[in-house]
Length: 131
Image (cartoon, rainbow, N blue to C red; front, top):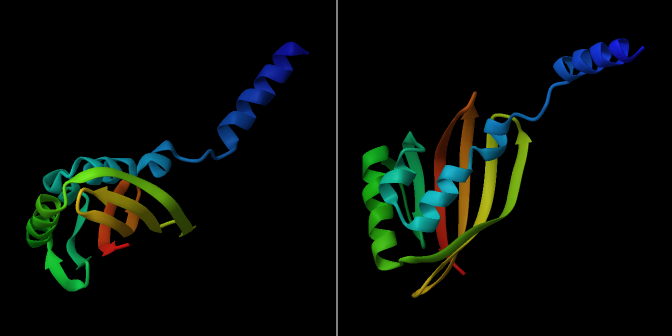
């Protein structure tokens, strides 16, 4: 009897799809990069082209250009803290996040849009809007 229950439990464990840990933690490196003010680390997760809005200055940039723009933002607004306050994952391949970024020079709402392709996440839109 015990062996049957054990086998049944094992089969159910294999058959039931669990939430992927990669999907759940995929935004974590982006959050850490913003919280630490590391433009180079953040740029690792940028798509080849990204839409940026830095407090009203909008544009589409290549990955390397976007890194420089974000680096300038972090230099002018060094991070004190960053945290996610909202996450929307209605579509399995596209996610949207809203965060709060605090610096000594003010607070910003951060809007992040990313595509998920397997375990590979690419940010295609990033906005820092003064709160």
